[in-house]
Image 1: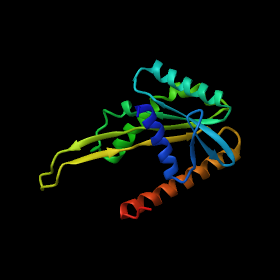
Image 2: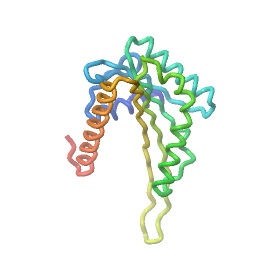
Image 3: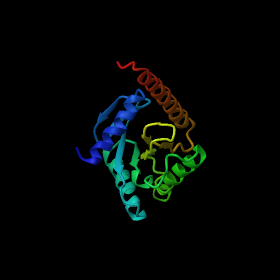
Length: 187
């Protein structure tokens, strides 16, 4: 499976994990946002060049517009997280995540008022090996999966309520699933 397809499946799995029903279909994925079927245009951005970020964001927006559905941009930004050390204190780690996510803001800004685009789901990944500890702790693989969802709400309060309810329900279901997984309760 190609890495672009892997990222599509990853996004679909995260949404399903949080209780959403996801289908494969143009633009790349689809799910119900309230009663409306919406799309997700999924893009993996490997290059650090601003022109490539803009190219992929523009391509995703055109893909949503061609689908005839409103939709979300799902963007993989792994290459922007490779410099981050996972052993940093929480505040520093979160600041680094924010800088990495914010790096694509200029490419997104021109699409904020597009009525076809509901927002962006940005994902990153960072990992590193930690050496064995002096107290005999074994080496560890430290992994972080930061993400940022940002709905472009506009002036419609109903849109804001829908977005807030969706994210709240998704987060609660995801947390329940993680707790069950940690306990070994696999169904």
